[in-house]
Length: 505
Ligand code: KIV
Ligand code: ZN
Image (tube, rainbow, N blue to C red):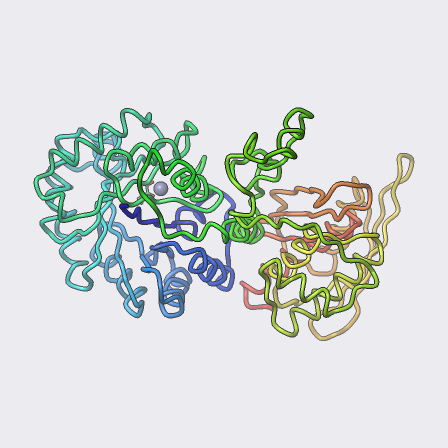
Protein backbone atom coordinates (compact mmCIF):
# COMPACT_ATOMS: atom_id res chain seq x y z
CA UNK A 1 0.00 0.00 0.00
CA UNK A 2 1.25 3.52 -0.79
CA UNK A 3 2.29 5.76 2.10
CA UNK A 4 0.98 9.30 2.39
CA UNK A 5 3.48 11.60 4.10
CA UNK A 6 1.84 13.57 6.91
CA UNK A 7 3.36 17.05 7.10
CA UNK A 8 2.19 18.87 10.20
CA UNK A 9 2.22 22.67 10.14
CA UNK A 10 0.52 23.34 13.49
CA UNK A 11 3.60 25.19 14.72
CA UNK A 12 3.80 27.38 11.60
CA UNK A 13 0.49 27.90 9.75
CA UNK A 14 -1.42 26.86 12.89
CA UNK A 15 0.36 29.40 15.03
CA UNK A 16 -0.26 32.01 12.32
CA UNK A 17 -3.97 31.88 13.25
CA UNK A 18 -5.26 35.15 14.66
CA UNK A 19 -4.54 35.19 18.37
CA UNK A 20 -2.36 32.07 18.31
CA UNK A 21 0.56 32.47 20.68
CA UNK A 22 2.88 29.77 21.85
CA UNK A 23 6.00 30.31 23.88
CA UNK A 24 9.27 28.48 23.36
CA UNK A 25 8.49 25.67 25.85
CA UNK A 26 5.00 25.16 24.50
CA UNK A 27 6.34 24.81 20.95
CA UNK A 28 8.81 22.19 22.14
CA UNK A 29 6.08 20.32 24.04
CA UNK A 30 3.88 20.25 20.95
CA UNK A 31 6.79 19.12 18.75
CA UNK A 32 7.52 16.22 21.13
CA UNK A 33 3.86 15.23 21.05
CA UNK A 34 3.77 15.41 17.23
CA UNK A 35 6.72 13.05 17.28
CA UNK A 36 4.75 10.64 19.52
CA UNK A 37 1.82 11.01 17.13
CA UNK A 38 4.03 9.74 14.31
CA UNK A 39 3.88 12.62 11.81
CA UNK A 40 6.56 12.43 9.12
CA UNK A 41 7.43 16.13 8.90
CA UNK A 42 7.08 18.93 11.44
CA UNK A 43 7.08 22.43 9.97
CA UNK A 44 8.48 24.10 13.06
CA UNK A 45 8.30 27.75 12.03
CA UNK A 46 9.36 30.60 9.78
CA UNK A 47 12.83 31.55 11.08
CA UNK A 48 13.10 34.83 9.14
CA UNK A 49 10.11 36.10 11.16
CA UNK A 50 12.11 36.79 14.33
CA UNK A 51 15.11 35.71 16.37
CA UNK A 52 12.77 33.97 18.83
CA UNK A 53 11.21 31.95 16.05
CA UNK A 54 14.62 30.96 14.72
CA UNK A 55 15.60 29.88 18.21
CA UNK A 56 12.47 27.75 18.67
CA UNK A 57 12.95 26.01 15.31
CA UNK A 58 16.61 25.39 16.12
CA UNK A 59 15.76 23.83 19.50
CA UNK A 60 13.09 21.58 17.97
CA UNK A 61 15.59 20.52 15.28
CA UNK A 62 18.12 19.61 17.93
CA UNK A 63 15.75 17.77 20.19
CA UNK A 64 13.16 16.00 18.04
CA UNK A 65 15.11 13.47 16.02
CA UNK A 66 12.73 11.05 14.29
CA UNK A 67 10.63 13.23 11.95
CA UNK A 68 12.01 15.65 9.37
CA UNK A 69 12.11 19.18 10.78
CA UNK A 70 11.21 21.79 8.23
CA UNK A 71 11.77 25.56 8.21
CA UNK A 72 9.69 27.79 5.95
CA UNK A 73 11.29 30.62 4.02
CA UNK A 74 10.23 33.17 1.46
CA UNK A 75 12.31 33.49 -1.68
CA UNK A 76 15.05 35.76 -0.36
CA UNK A 77 18.66 34.76 -0.02
CA UNK A 78 18.98 35.87 3.64
CA UNK A 79 15.78 34.13 4.63
CA UNK A 80 16.88 30.89 2.96
CA UNK A 81 20.18 31.12 4.87
CA UNK A 82 18.30 31.68 8.14
CA UNK A 83 16.06 28.70 7.46
CA UNK A 84 19.15 26.54 7.06
CA UNK A 85 20.70 28.05 10.20
CA UNK A 86 17.59 26.93 12.11
CA UNK A 87 17.41 23.32 10.88
CA UNK A 88 21.01 22.44 10.15
CA UNK A 89 21.38 20.37 13.33
CA UNK A 90 18.24 18.32 12.65
CA UNK A 91 18.61 14.60 12.03
CA UNK A 92 16.47 15.13 8.90
CA UNK A 93 16.44 18.82 7.89
CA UNK A 94 14.11 20.23 5.28
CA UNK A 95 13.92 23.75 3.79
CA UNK A 96 10.56 24.88 2.39
CA UNK A 97 10.75 27.80 -0.06
CA UNK A 98 7.55 29.55 -1.11
CA UNK A 99 6.81 32.22 -3.71
CA UNK A 100 3.50 33.46 -5.11
CA UNK A 101 2.62 32.17 -8.57
CA UNK A 102 -0.88 33.39 -9.44
CA UNK A 103 -1.32 36.41 -11.70
CA UNK A 104 -3.45 38.03 -8.99
CA UNK A 105 -0.51 37.93 -6.56
CA UNK A 106 2.07 38.81 -9.22
CA UNK A 107 0.14 41.83 -10.50
CA UNK A 108 -1.22 43.30 -7.28
CA UNK A 109 1.23 42.21 -4.61
CA UNK A 110 4.66 41.42 -6.03
CA UNK A 111 4.44 43.52 -9.20
CA UNK A 112 6.69 41.08 -11.04
CA UNK A 113 6.42 39.16 -14.31
CA UNK A 114 5.95 35.40 -14.54
CA UNK A 115 9.50 34.99 -15.87
CA UNK A 116 10.99 36.98 -13.00
CA UNK A 117 9.11 34.80 -10.49
CA UNK A 118 10.18 31.62 -12.22
CA UNK A 119 13.83 32.73 -12.13
CA UNK A 120 13.73 33.64 -8.41
CA UNK A 121 12.01 30.38 -7.53
CA UNK A 122 14.65 28.40 -9.35
CA UNK A 123 17.47 30.47 -7.89
CA UNK A 124 16.27 30.15 -4.28
CA UNK A 125 15.61 26.42 -4.56
CA UNK A 126 19.15 26.01 -5.94
CA UNK A 127 20.50 28.08 -3.03
CA UNK A 128 18.65 25.93 -0.48
CA UNK A 129 19.85 22.78 -2.27
CA UNK A 130 23.47 23.77 -1.60
CA UNK A 131 22.67 23.32 2.10
CA UNK A 132 20.44 20.28 2.19
CA UNK A 133 18.98 17.59 0.00
CA UNK A 134 15.38 17.69 1.21
CA UNK A 135 13.86 20.77 -0.43
CA UNK A 136 10.19 21.65 -0.75
CA UNK A 137 8.83 24.36 -3.01
CA UNK A 138 5.35 25.96 -2.85
CA UNK A 139 3.98 28.15 -5.64
CA UNK A 140 1.66 30.16 -3.41
CA UNK A 141 -1.96 30.53 -4.57
CA UNK A 142 -1.42 27.56 -6.92
CA UNK A 143 -5.14 26.81 -7.21
CA UNK A 144 -5.65 30.25 -8.83
CA UNK A 145 -2.55 29.98 -11.02
CA UNK A 146 -2.83 29.33 -14.73
CA UNK A 147 -2.05 25.56 -15.04
CA UNK A 148 0.41 25.84 -17.93
CA UNK A 149 2.50 28.37 -15.96
CA UNK A 150 2.22 26.20 -12.86
CA UNK A 151 3.62 23.23 -14.82
CA UNK A 152 6.55 25.38 -15.99
CA UNK A 153 7.43 26.61 -12.54
CA UNK A 154 7.20 23.10 -11.06
CA UNK A 155 9.43 21.68 -13.77
CA UNK A 156 11.98 24.45 -13.17
CA UNK A 157 12.16 23.99 -9.38
CA UNK A 158 12.43 20.20 -9.70
CA UNK A 159 15.33 20.76 -12.10
CA UNK A 160 16.87 23.03 -9.46
CA UNK A 161 16.61 20.31 -6.81
CA UNK A 162 13.15 20.42 -5.21
CA UNK A 163 12.23 16.97 -3.89
CA UNK A 164 8.67 17.91 -2.88
CA UNK A 165 6.38 20.26 -4.79
CA UNK A 166 3.54 21.55 -2.70
CA UNK A 167 0.30 22.79 -4.27
CA UNK A 168 -1.28 25.30 -1.90
CA UNK A 169 -4.92 26.25 -2.08
CA UNK A 170 -3.83 29.36 -0.20
CA UNK A 171 -7.20 31.09 -0.06
CA UNK A 172 -9.39 27.98 0.21
CA UNK A 173 -10.95 28.62 -3.20
CA UNK A 174 -10.77 25.16 -4.76
CA UNK A 175 -13.60 22.63 -5.08
CA UNK A 176 -12.70 18.91 -4.75
CA UNK A 177 -13.30 17.74 -8.33
CA UNK A 178 -11.43 20.75 -9.73
CA UNK A 179 -8.54 20.41 -7.27
CA UNK A 180 -8.22 16.70 -8.06
CA UNK A 181 -8.06 17.58 -11.76
CA UNK A 182 -5.27 20.06 -11.05
CA UNK A 183 -3.24 17.31 -9.34
CA UNK A 184 -3.89 14.85 -12.20
CA UNK A 185 -2.86 17.58 -14.65
CA UNK A 186 0.42 18.06 -12.78
CA UNK A 187 1.05 14.28 -12.87
CA UNK A 188 0.66 14.18 -16.63
CA UNK A 189 2.05 17.56 -17.73
CA UNK A 190 5.18 18.13 -15.66
CA UNK A 191 7.82 16.04 -17.44
CA UNK A 192 10.13 15.51 -14.43
CA UNK A 193 7.36 15.07 -11.82
CA UNK A 194 8.52 11.52 -11.00
CA UNK A 195 11.57 13.08 -9.29
CA UNK A 196 9.41 14.82 -6.67
CA UNK A 197 6.61 14.07 -4.24
CA UNK A 198 3.38 16.00 -4.90
CA UNK A 199 2.10 17.63 -1.75
CA UNK A 200 -1.09 19.60 -1.04
CA UNK A 201 -1.78 22.38 1.44
CA UNK A 202 -5.46 23.28 1.66
CA UNK A 203 -7.15 26.10 3.53
CA UNK A 204 -10.67 25.88 4.83
CA UNK A 205 -12.36 29.11 3.71
CA UNK A 206 -15.20 27.17 2.06
CA UNK A 207 -15.04 24.32 4.58
CA UNK A 208 -13.46 22.07 1.93
CA UNK A 209 -9.85 21.74 3.08
CA UNK A 210 -10.11 18.09 4.09
CA UNK A 211 -12.26 17.14 1.08
CA UNK A 212 -9.79 18.82 -1.28
CA UNK A 213 -6.80 17.12 0.38
CA UNK A 214 -8.44 13.70 0.16
CA UNK A 215 -9.38 14.17 -3.48
CA UNK A 216 -5.78 15.21 -4.19
CA UNK A 217 -4.58 11.97 -2.57
CA UNK A 218 -6.93 10.00 -4.81
CA UNK A 219 -5.40 11.79 -7.79
CA UNK A 220 -1.76 11.14 -6.90
CA UNK A 221 -0.66 13.51 -4.11
CA UNK A 222 1.51 11.68 -1.58
CA UNK A 223 2.02 14.38 1.04
CA UNK A 224 -0.72 16.24 2.89
CA UNK A 225 -0.07 19.39 4.88
CA UNK A 226 -2.37 19.78 7.83
CA UNK A 227 -2.72 20.98 11.42
CA UNK A 228 -4.07 19.58 14.65
CA UNK A 229 -7.71 20.61 15.12
CA UNK A 230 -7.48 22.33 11.72
CA UNK A 231 -6.15 25.55 13.24
CA UNK A 232 -4.47 28.02 10.91
CA UNK A 233 -4.67 31.26 8.99
CA UNK A 234 -8.30 32.56 8.75
CA UNK A 235 -10.70 29.58 8.63
CA UNK A 236 -7.77 27.27 9.21
CA UNK A 237 -5.98 24.43 7.45
CA UNK A 238 -7.00 20.88 6.68
CA UNK A 239 -7.37 19.01 9.93
CA UNK A 240 -4.81 16.27 10.48
CA UNK A 241 -7.11 14.04 12.51
CA UNK A 242 -9.87 14.18 9.90
CA UNK A 243 -7.54 13.32 7.01
CA UNK A 244 -5.84 10.50 8.90
CA UNK A 245 -9.09 8.94 10.10
CA UNK A 246 -10.75 9.27 6.67
CA UNK A 247 -7.82 7.46 5.07
CA UNK A 248 -7.93 4.80 7.78
CA UNK A 249 -11.70 4.35 7.89
CA UNK A 250 -12.11 4.36 4.09
CA UNK A 251 -8.98 2.45 3.11
CA UNK A 252 -11.27 0.48 0.79
CA UNK A 253 -11.46 3.66 -1.29
CA UNK A 254 -8.09 5.34 -0.85
CA UNK A 255 -5.81 2.30 -0.68
CA UNK A 256 -3.08 4.31 1.06
CA UNK A 257 -1.86 4.50 4.64
CA UNK A 258 -0.16 6.97 6.98
CA UNK A 259 2.34 6.33 9.77
CA UNK A 260 0.24 8.26 12.31
CA UNK A 261 -0.48 6.49 15.58
CA UNK A 262 -4.18 7.28 15.82
CA UNK A 263 -4.23 6.50 19.55
CA UNK A 264 -2.28 9.72 20.14
CA UNK A 265 -4.79 11.89 18.29
CA UNK A 266 -7.04 12.83 21.18
CA UNK A 267 -4.16 13.66 23.49
CA UNK A 268 -2.50 15.81 20.81
CA UNK A 269 -5.76 17.60 20.07
CA UNK A 270 -6.27 18.44 23.76
CA UNK A 271 -2.72 19.64 24.14
CA UNK A 272 -2.88 21.94 21.11
CA UNK A 273 -6.22 23.32 22.20
CA UNK A 274 -5.00 23.97 25.74
CA UNK A 275 -1.72 25.58 24.74
CA UNK A 276 -3.06 27.73 21.89
CA UNK A 277 -6.27 28.61 23.69
CA UNK A 278 -8.33 27.62 20.62
CA UNK A 279 -11.28 25.63 21.88
CA UNK A 280 -12.43 22.63 19.85
CA UNK A 281 -16.06 23.04 18.76
CA UNK A 282 -18.24 20.29 20.34
CA UNK A 283 -19.43 18.97 16.96
CA UNK A 284 -15.92 18.87 15.45
CA UNK A 285 -15.33 15.56 13.64
CA UNK A 286 -13.07 13.03 15.42
CA UNK A 287 -12.08 15.13 18.46
CA UNK A 288 -15.14 17.22 19.37
CA UNK A 289 -16.82 16.50 22.71
CA UNK A 290 -19.93 15.26 20.91
CA UNK A 291 -18.15 13.26 18.18
CA UNK A 292 -19.03 9.95 19.88
CA UNK A 293 -22.06 10.97 21.94
CA UNK A 294 -25.42 9.58 20.91
CA UNK A 295 -28.44 11.56 21.94
CA UNK A 296 -31.31 9.93 20.11
CA UNK A 297 -32.91 6.94 21.85
CA UNK A 298 -32.88 4.91 18.64
CA UNK A 299 -29.16 5.54 18.17
CA UNK A 300 -28.38 4.72 21.81
CA UNK A 301 -30.32 1.50 21.49
CA UNK A 302 -28.36 0.55 18.36
CA UNK A 303 -24.96 1.36 19.89
CA UNK A 304 -25.74 -0.71 22.99
CA UNK A 305 -26.67 -3.67 20.79
CA UNK A 306 -23.71 -3.29 18.41
CA UNK A 307 -21.53 -0.14 18.18
CA UNK A 308 -21.12 -0.45 14.41
CA UNK A 309 -24.82 0.41 13.94
CA UNK A 310 -24.09 4.12 14.51
CA UNK A 311 -20.31 4.33 15.02
CA UNK A 312 -17.95 4.15 12.04
CA UNK A 313 -14.86 4.46 14.27
CA UNK A 314 -14.03 3.13 17.70
CA UNK A 315 -13.33 6.12 20.00
CA UNK A 316 -10.58 4.08 21.69
CA UNK A 317 -8.79 3.95 18.33
CA UNK A 318 -8.36 7.74 18.61
CA UNK A 319 -7.24 7.51 22.23
CA UNK A 320 -10.43 8.92 23.74
CA UNK A 321 -10.40 7.72 27.36
CA UNK A 322 -12.84 4.83 27.54
CA UNK A 323 -13.22 4.28 31.22
CA UNK A 324 -14.84 6.76 33.51
CA UNK A 325 -13.14 5.55 36.62
CA UNK A 326 -13.85 8.15 39.23
CA UNK A 327 -11.51 9.45 41.93
CA UNK A 328 -12.64 11.28 45.04
CA UNK A 329 -11.43 13.10 48.13
CA UNK A 330 -10.16 9.89 49.69
CA UNK A 331 -7.98 8.99 46.69
CA UNK A 332 -4.28 9.18 47.42
CA UNK A 333 -1.35 10.44 45.38
CA UNK A 334 -0.56 6.95 44.16
CA UNK A 335 -4.09 6.40 42.77
CA UNK A 336 -3.99 9.84 41.18
CA UNK A 337 -0.61 9.14 39.58
CA UNK A 338 -1.84 5.77 38.25
CA UNK A 339 -4.88 7.38 36.67
CA UNK A 340 -2.62 9.99 35.07
CA UNK A 341 -0.46 7.21 33.62
CA UNK A 342 -3.54 5.40 32.27
CA UNK A 343 -4.56 8.62 30.56
CA UNK A 344 -1.07 8.87 29.05
CA UNK A 345 0.37 11.67 31.20
CA UNK A 346 3.71 11.56 32.98
CA UNK A 347 4.57 14.54 35.12
CA UNK A 348 7.87 15.36 36.83
CA UNK A 349 7.97 15.30 40.64
CA UNK A 350 7.24 19.02 41.17
CA UNK A 351 4.51 19.14 38.54
CA UNK A 352 2.96 16.00 40.00
CA UNK A 353 2.90 17.53 43.49
CA UNK A 354 1.25 20.68 42.21
CA UNK A 355 -1.27 18.70 40.15
CA UNK A 356 -2.07 16.49 43.14
CA UNK A 357 -2.61 19.58 45.28
CA UNK A 358 -5.00 20.94 42.64
CA UNK A 359 -6.74 17.56 42.52
CA UNK A 360 -7.24 17.63 46.30
CA UNK A 361 -8.75 21.10 46.10
CA UNK A 362 -11.19 19.96 43.39
CA UNK A 363 -12.01 16.73 45.26
CA UNK A 364 -12.81 18.72 48.40
CA UNK A 365 -15.50 20.58 46.47
CA UNK A 366 -16.69 17.92 44.05
CA UNK A 367 -17.90 14.47 45.05
CA UNK A 368 -16.45 12.73 42.04
CA UNK A 369 -13.38 13.68 40.00
CA UNK A 370 -13.49 12.06 36.57
CA UNK A 371 -11.10 11.85 33.62
CA UNK A 372 -12.13 15.18 32.12
CA UNK A 373 -11.52 16.91 35.46
CA UNK A 374 -8.09 15.30 35.61
CA UNK A 375 -7.31 16.43 32.07
CA UNK A 376 -8.24 19.95 33.06
CA UNK A 377 -5.89 19.80 36.06
CA UNK A 378 -3.04 18.55 33.85
CA UNK A 379 -3.80 21.29 31.31
CA UNK A 380 -3.55 23.87 34.08
CA UNK A 381 -0.16 22.49 35.06
CA UNK A 382 1.03 22.52 31.45
CA UNK A 383 0.00 26.10 30.94
CA UNK A 384 1.78 27.30 34.07
CA UNK A 385 4.68 29.76 33.84
CA UNK A 386 7.21 31.14 36.27
CA UNK A 387 5.08 33.43 38.42
CA UNK A 388 6.23 36.98 39.08
CA UNK A 389 2.94 37.46 40.95
CA UNK A 390 1.00 34.68 42.61
CA UNK A 391 -2.73 34.88 43.37
CA UNK A 392 -3.03 34.35 47.11
CA UNK A 393 -6.53 35.48 48.00
CA UNK A 394 -9.63 36.80 46.29
CA UNK A 395 -12.96 37.98 47.60
CA UNK A 396 -15.87 39.48 45.67
CA UNK A 397 -19.21 40.94 46.51
CA UNK A 398 -21.84 41.35 43.82
CA UNK A 399 -25.56 41.06 43.21
CA UNK A 400 -28.37 42.72 41.30
CA UNK A 401 -28.54 45.73 43.65
CA UNK A 402 -24.90 46.08 44.69
CA UNK A 403 -21.80 47.49 43.07
CA UNK A 404 -19.44 44.64 42.19
CA UNK A 405 -16.39 44.95 44.43
CA UNK A 406 -13.26 42.80 44.56
CA UNK A 407 -10.39 42.53 47.00
CA UNK A 408 -7.30 40.63 45.91
CA UNK A 409 -4.02 39.77 47.56
CA UNK A 410 -1.04 38.77 45.44
CA UNK A 411 2.39 37.58 46.47
CA UNK A 412 4.84 39.77 44.59
CA UNK A 413 8.30 39.13 43.12
CA UNK A 414 10.10 39.64 46.44
CA UNK A 415 7.65 37.48 48.40
CA UNK A 416 5.77 40.45 49.83
CA UNK A 417 1.95 40.36 50.15
CA UNK A 418 0.27 43.09 48.08
CA UNK A 419 -3.42 43.77 48.55
CA UNK A 420 -5.83 46.11 46.78
CA UNK A 421 -9.51 46.48 45.95
CA UNK A 422 -11.58 47.85 43.07
CA UNK A 423 -15.11 48.36 41.82
CA UNK A 424 -16.19 47.06 38.41
CA UNK A 425 -19.10 46.61 36.05
CA UNK A 426 -19.25 42.96 37.12
CA UNK A 427 -17.29 40.71 39.49
CA UNK A 428 -14.70 39.66 36.87
CA UNK A 429 -14.15 43.27 35.84
CA UNK A 430 -13.70 44.25 39.50
CA UNK A 431 -11.18 41.43 40.05
CA UNK A 432 -9.18 42.37 36.94
CA UNK A 433 -9.16 46.03 37.95
CA UNK A 434 -7.95 45.17 41.46
CA UNK A 435 -5.17 43.02 40.00
CA UNK A 436 -4.22 45.84 37.60
CA UNK A 437 -3.87 48.24 40.53
CA UNK A 438 -1.13 45.98 41.89
CA UNK A 439 0.64 44.64 38.77
CA UNK A 440 0.41 47.88 36.75
CA UNK A 441 1.14 46.47 33.26
CA UNK A 442 -0.98 48.17 30.58
CA UNK A 443 -2.88 45.63 28.49
CA UNK A 444 -6.22 45.03 26.78
CA UNK A 445 -8.42 42.03 27.32
CA UNK A 446 -9.23 40.85 23.79
CA UNK A 447 -10.92 37.50 24.45
CA UNK A 448 -12.67 35.86 27.36
CA UNK A 449 -14.41 32.51 27.30
CA UNK A 450 -15.69 30.21 29.98
CA UNK A 451 -16.78 26.62 29.60
CA UNK A 452 -17.61 23.83 31.98
CA UNK A 453 -15.39 20.76 31.86
CA UNK A 454 -18.09 18.30 32.86
CA UNK A 455 -21.84 18.34 33.29
CA UNK A 456 -23.43 19.14 36.64
CA UNK A 457 -23.70 22.14 38.90
CA UNK A 458 -20.43 21.34 40.67
CA UNK A 459 -18.43 21.20 37.40
CA UNK A 460 -15.00 22.77 37.01
CA UNK A 461 -15.19 25.98 34.98
CA UNK A 462 -12.33 26.61 32.57
CA UNK A 463 -11.58 30.19 31.60
CA UNK A 464 -9.46 31.02 28.56
CA UNK A 465 -8.45 34.60 27.90
CA UNK A 466 -6.18 36.62 25.66
CA UNK A 467 -4.65 39.96 26.49
CA UNK A 468 -2.69 42.25 24.22
CA UNK A 469 0.23 44.43 25.15
CA UNK A 470 2.48 46.35 22.69
CA UNK A 471 0.89 44.46 19.78
CA UNK A 472 1.69 41.02 21.24
CA UNK A 473 -1.01 38.62 22.38
CA UNK A 474 -0.69 36.45 25.50
CA UNK A 475 -3.07 33.68 26.45
CA UNK A 476 -4.11 32.74 29.96
CA UNK A 477 -5.92 29.76 31.39
CA UNK A 478 -7.51 29.14 34.74
CA UNK A 479 -9.73 26.41 36.15
CA UNK A 480 -11.75 26.18 39.34
CA UNK A 481 -15.18 25.11 40.51
CA UNK A 482 -15.67 28.87 41.09
CA UNK A 483 -15.67 30.73 37.76
CA UNK A 484 -14.58 34.03 39.36
CA UNK A 485 -11.52 32.31 40.83
CA UNK A 486 -10.92 30.61 37.45
CA UNK A 487 -11.14 34.05 35.76
CA UNK A 488 -8.64 35.53 38.23
CA UNK A 489 -6.25 32.60 37.70
CA UNK A 490 -6.53 32.96 33.90
CA UNK A 491 -5.68 36.67 34.15
CA UNK A 492 -2.71 36.04 36.45
CA UNK A 493 -1.51 33.33 34.05
CA UNK A 494 -1.67 35.72 31.07
CA UNK A 495 0.00 38.56 33.04
CA UNK A 496 2.81 36.29 34.20
CA UNK A 497 3.37 35.21 30.59
CA UNK A 498 3.52 38.84 29.54
CA UNK A 499 5.98 39.65 32.33
CA UNK A 500 8.08 36.60 31.55
CA UNK A 501 8.34 37.50 27.89
CA UNK A 502 9.38 41.03 28.86
CA UNK A 503 12.03 39.52 31.11
CA UNK A 504 10.44 40.73 34.31
CA UNK A 505 9.54 37.40 35.91
O1 KIV B 1 -1.23 28.82 2.41
C1 KIV B 1 -0.12 28.87 1.85
O2 KIV B 1 0.00 29.09 0.65
C2 KIV B 1 1.05 28.67 2.69
C3 KIV B 1 2.35 28.50 1.97
C4 KIV B 1 3.45 29.19 2.69
C5 KIV B 1 2.62 27.05 1.75
O3 KIV B 1 0.94 28.56 3.89
ZN1 ZN C 1 -1.15 28.07 4.46
